[in-house]
Image 1 (cartoon, rainbow, N blue to C red):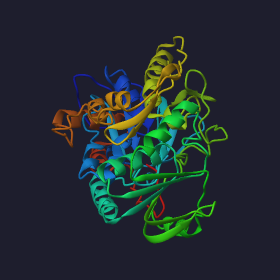
Image 2 (cartoon, rainbow, N blue to C red):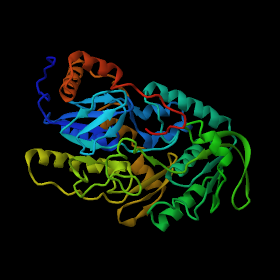
Image 3 (cartoon, helix red, strand yellow):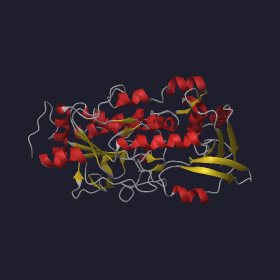
Length: 432
């Protein structure tokens, strides 16, 4: 082993592997890392944090995606963030296999936060931050060249995409086709929230809403299989299930997110949705030292703020296990939904069932939480830091050396190229 040194050492501390550097994962990591009581290692398939909550605006606003791609470089003081794709988690939650890495990586504690996927442009599957901007630049050209845009699916993503296009490109004719009789029909939102959201979308003079109508996906589906995107460009006429004909030259399919289950579906207990079964302490069933947070855990609805609120509970319970103390039950987060329809409009369902409109929504959601999220990663959006300074790099290297029980040269190699062999994005791949 090498001789990395730091004022605060983590080389002899319990190793916490965090699988997925999303909203929940980074919050748990920061809390456990702050006092060097644990050796925290995040493994994520990307080399950047994706702030997907704000990403749809990049479909129409130049360079907006740059606000949504945030370096991990300043996230941790003592631990490390390493790029790699976890392909399997052991049944006992004590080790993982990484694509292209022969040796399993073991740990004392594990936190699974693999999240969910959405087809581009809702999210993006690229593992390299440098490949993100070209994708959105191309998308903006496609949107700019379209005159009649159709959005299929009236869930949150479909509505927010419509809001962005309707606001920034009011000359576009937009048609929303939704199979339900109400918008947001697959959620537990109140009837009042759904009605208010419909009224808010219909306030845009260039938007037409068709409810209770479906589309035959056969023609579109074949083209979508060739791409990890959720849109198809080209002049066509769509006939709905009620016989209504819609002329269009750009179709966006906004038909729901998918859980990222590949790493755990074979070995960990899951429910009928594919989410990991956890108890009231957020421990994975049958794995006392392993936890799950966010979309992949079956404890609460799938929202980013829920994952962040689960992090303190996991932090307390890992510390309690290490100290052999009583665990803390997780208190479920209050229900909250903020639906932005461009920068000025939107609807919200607040705790106690209160439903609000444009002013409250834009007051709370503001810049789509861009500045707050950069701050969460200890970054300044005006001066991004892409790589750790020399002292921080030494700490990361020491963390990896101790966690993986490898020599100095291998640590340096991982720091440069990531764990194992990076998988290329495949046709139709949407996982993030």
